Length: 247
Image (cartoon, rainbow, N blue to C red; front, side, top):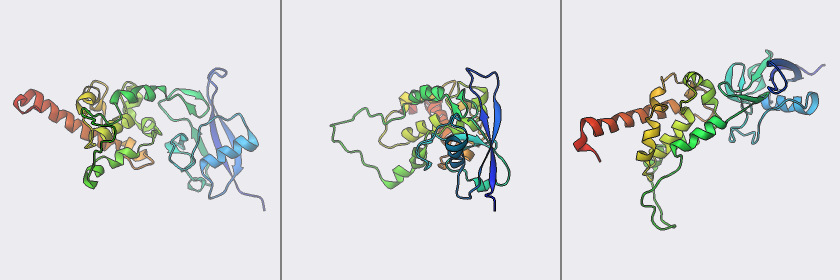
């Protein structure tokens, strides 16, 4: 009995050599325990070594294998073929990013924006090198879920605001800004505020929520942005309406 197969329609494009992208179909073995990344690796090893894509850990941790799979941004190491079989699986690069080749996109825009929100703990009184700044479980819980972001950028591919306004800082950068601002050990809210609440910051978000829907680590970037909006509004209230309450 012939082994069952499934069709992968892979987006192919080499901008330096081709005028337009195209989809190339490949027949690969269908195995229920295979993910889309396994099928791509089969293509690479047995059918066409020229297909270009990124992957590393294969465990949903590194975030490097993000792609658009049947129209949805997903990690290819977590998308099982059995979710689609016997229908074809269409694999495209993440939307809203320039394509370098095939399924590989250019992440420079995000990498340049991320440092602007200062995604690290800022201390004005760091103390000696061996100083400890302890937290209670409740303090940890205020930011724990935002610390789970793996920078896979599925949220940027799903964000309609980023698609229209590329200057928007975007869901992952703002979720990480919230992660550190909510950390009880951090004292950098004042440094982040001009960027987070600036013209390309949280107020561009229209709360569509697709960033939260597609996140593979159950981070809630939309919720983080709303918390930052509230903090920004309270800061404005203190500074403009109630200046005597400024701290």
